[in-house]
Amino acid sequence: MVHEAVPKVELHCHLIGVLNARLLKAMRAAGNPVLVAPDDVTPVGKDEGAIGFARWLERVEPYKSADWRTYLPIIAWHMGRLVEQGAVYAELMISPLMFPRDLSSAVDEFAQLRHWVKCNEHGRIQIEFLALIPRSLPEELIQSEIERCVAFAKADGICGISIAGLEQDCPVSRFRRLFQILRDHGLGIEIHAGERGGPQEVREALDIGLADRIGHGVSAFQDNDLVKRLLDQNVHIEFCPTSNLKMGTVTEISQHPIGRARDLGMNFSINTDDPGAFDCDLEHEFAIVEETFGFTRADFQFIARNALSARFQPELRNRSAQSLVVQNEAPAL
Image (tube, rainbow, N blue to C red; front, side, top):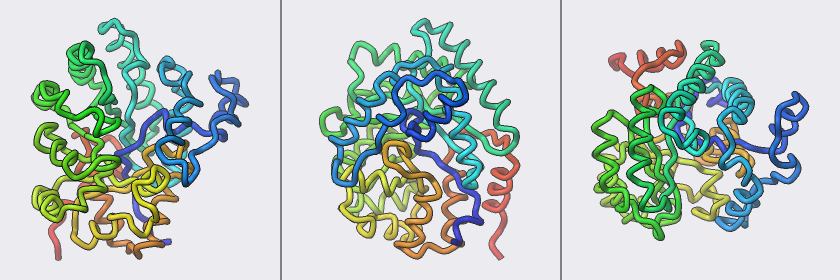
């Protein structure tokens, strides 16, 4: 297939969502601690939707607050899989719960994680982190979460933040004071919107959340004026086709707006979201888009360059990723 020869960039993947039975069995065989029985981590079925995903999260509950050291073999396994699939750059959303509550200790331990990751990239791929902030975060914790994100950023631990969770129950306006502070400290802002909510949630992510990138963004395509705004402002959309199918955001892949976005020349990437939960990988997402919408090699090259340009980490360590930047900056003939 044509996508196989094109370098890939992934911007939307939750670290906990990487967990699956195959990975956990490999970890156990290698003598690493496993917090849940591998065969219990069954993926979400096609018709289970948000309820099925909530059940999946319950099955991996012990990993929600697991220490970052527990995640090292998981990250190593995921890095290897990304390299096998041709990825050269990836950003992972991680929970601050992986680190101590004491801020000084948290910064020190995050630095240890970053050092370990850089040592294990081996020039094959570049991995960066976004701090995941749930929309349901209690009001009394928002200020402390701002302080943690700023401290992590200053220590080169994270390059951005991600706001995720139920859109309609927890509006992004709850974090209004958070966004400008993070922007002033050079952090990128990604907001999940337009997955379960409507176009208005996407507008709020842009107007209130100051979002650089929109996670999912599917419902935005119900509103032509909003689509024009996304196009005119060159807002990057992180599409997650299989996730949207499994969550019931679309009923068939053929209904996904990614084909329309391609036709309009919009700025977007192709991502897995939670590959373990949704039984997919980056290769599968690219293949299904190619098969369903007839994406060409030129389309995938355009997507790769746009995705890399939308990254939150300015510094590139990976030579293959650097070559994409050079291609993007080269004048058209």
